[in-house]
Length: 113
Image (cartoon, rainbow, N blue to C red; front, side):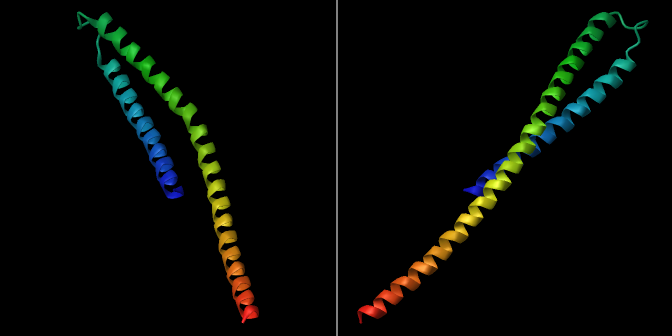
């Protein structure tokens, strides 16, 4: 169960990083494209420019959202690690209790004979 949560957390973090990388790449390409547009040679410069600016604003919003998600992901990761440690401690306690219970049962069985 905890390994499933770990893999889901890792997949989520990978997805966020992938989104950030892709958005950064798109943003860079759009900036380069914007610089290539020559207002003197393009009839529809104003239209293309406004569309590019809209896209750049959308990308900025996406990057801001991704940055806001990152601290939340880090918090989740640290909480998950703490829970995993607690689970390990509980599993060890259960093993110790089983061993002690087994010893008690063997001792009681020996007394009954």
